[in-house]
Image (tube, rainbow, N blue to C red; front, side, top):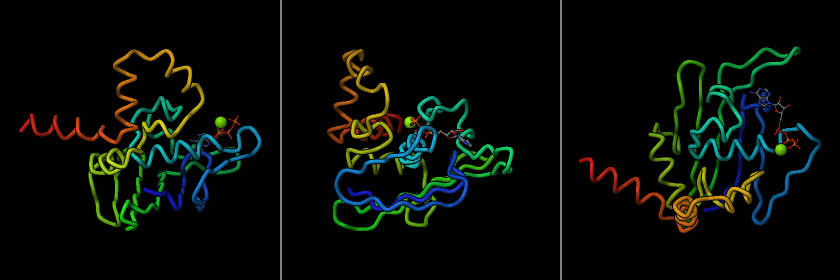
Length: 174
Ligand code: ATP
Ligand code: MG
């Protein structure tokens, strides 16, 4: 899977709609402190289904919505859209939107889908919200301090087999 484009609107500091092309190869994000570099990486995690407010540096999930400044009113929704191509080169467009008081909704190529469907797509492609490919601050220390079972989960994410656990739990509960 290759990421091609990221669109953000009302997500954290990205209050106005913004669009970024993601070129093949390594991408670097540079800028002064507080300009939104980490927010960008969090947007990528979030659209792939991240549900832990802590890893979004938030108290609650609605905190990802632009909170307003002295000069601008807050927004009532945040939306992130990730354009990618799958392993067959077919386009994949995943959108996550959160509205105050209404929770998150996902779309895949324009159709409403469940959070789980989106999670499975990325887990099967060995990417996703918990992918070891996204190395955030403190992550290296976390890997060193991790318990064996936690380290196994990281390896399973990297191997693209994390989605199998979800499917097994599903099958067992039927
Ligand atoms: P550093 O170089 O220090 O790591 P950075 O470029 O990674 O900085 P971020 O942490 O991505 O910066 O962005 C921080 C900015 O985002 C802060 O100014 C913060 O106020 C703003 N921000 C975060 N959440 C929201 C929100 N919900 N609404 C408005 N602004 C927000
Ligand atoms: Mg940062």
